[in-house]
Structure formats: C-alpha cells, structure tokens
Image (cartoon, rainbow, N blue to C red):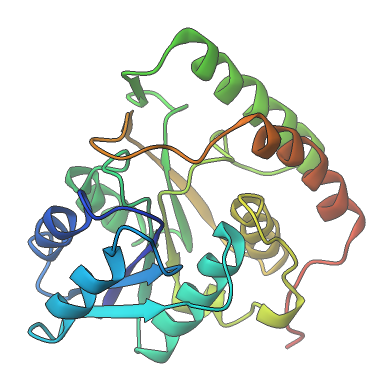
Amino acid sequence: MKIVAVLPTWNEADNILPLINELLGVSRHLEVLVVDDDSPDGTWKLVAERASNDRRVHLLHRTTERGRGTAGIAGFQRALELGADLVVEMDADWSHHPRFLRDLLEGSRSADVVIGSRLVRGGGEQGRNLLRTLITLGANLYLRVLLRLPVRDCTSGYRVFRRSTLERFDWNALRSTGPAIVQEMLVTARAAGARFNEVPILFEERRAGTSTFNSKIMLAGLGAPWRLLLSRPAVRML
C-alpha cells in the first residue's frame, strides 16, 4: 500500500521541511509530493535538496503555470504515476495538521473519499476570527445545497482519495484553475460512484507565511459552483 501526500505550495519555505518530516513519520508507506509554482521564497529549492537525499520526497516544480486548481490536478496525476494506492491532499501551512492523518487513512478502509471535516462532531477551527468562521459555515451550506454533495465540509482541502476513484477521472476535462477544484473533484467523485466519509479535524491558522485568501477569491468561489452545476462531470466511461 503506497500513500502519496500531495502538497501544493506557494511561498511556504518556513513551513515545508518541518511538515515533510512530520508527514514521513505518519507511516513508512507514505511519500510526499510537493507541487510548487516556482515560489519566489525558494520553497522548491528546499524540497529539491531534500528530494535528492530521500526517495520518499518528490518535487513537481512548475515554472510556466500557476494556480491552486491546476497544481492540484497536476499533483494527483503525478501521484498516480508514482504508483499511489491512496492520495492525500492537504495544505502546506500546518492548517491541516499531520496528527489527524492516521484517522483519515483509517477512514479510507470503508470509503473512497475521506474528508478531514471541521463540520462534523469533534471537528472545528482554532485561531480564526468570527467572520472567517461564518464564511466557512455559509459557503458550505451554499455549496452543499447547490451541488447536492453528500458531505458537510465541502471546502476542506484535507482529503484522501482511493486510486480506483481517481482512475475514473477525465483529468483533461477538469476546468477549475483556482480553489473551486476542491468542489469539482467532489462532484466528479460522486458521479464516479464514490463512497464518502468525514473524519473530524481541528483546522488551525497557518504557522508562518501569508495566506493567499482574499475577497476576489471568495467572490470567484461563489460563481464557480454554477459552472459545475451546468457542466458534465469529468468522469471516464467504463
């Protein structure tokens, strides 16, 4: 059983190496794939050096394309090329703490997609102001109802996917270039017949660096679900 944790990064030099170290301690079967969009702070250089000395660490250094959506797509595809049986997706700023990963992996025994959820019993957020918490609640209600997703935390980027589900994806048909890729993958997995499970996590504010979240991203996120609703899921026909 090979597990590959995909970490899309942008200016995470202060976080990435300690995070890699902790992730590798979760399981001897786990490998880390960092997908970096040519970060000006040299995140990719740190990972490249580490990867040169550790077979369990991989780097996908993207120099001609940027964006959370395309980085996620490229990362999942590379993880499959590496032979992953389970692909973990998570943020690289410690908001998704590795201490919850064993629970997510355990949840994959009975599900095809496991979500680290803030919105089930035992889950929550720490270090966030009331406005951001309200935005999280409102956005998830909006997405869950509009897209008819069978999960409570539709915006969580801390997930585990089984290979058998990802192999049903038509990767060239995925259209989200930004954060909406999180929901597009859920919609696609649902169309592929995936079984879902949610495991409680505590979402924490980033340890270092600056968040890229802003009002422009939030407004774009409100419109993206309508495109997903009207488009055909990117699922390969059997």
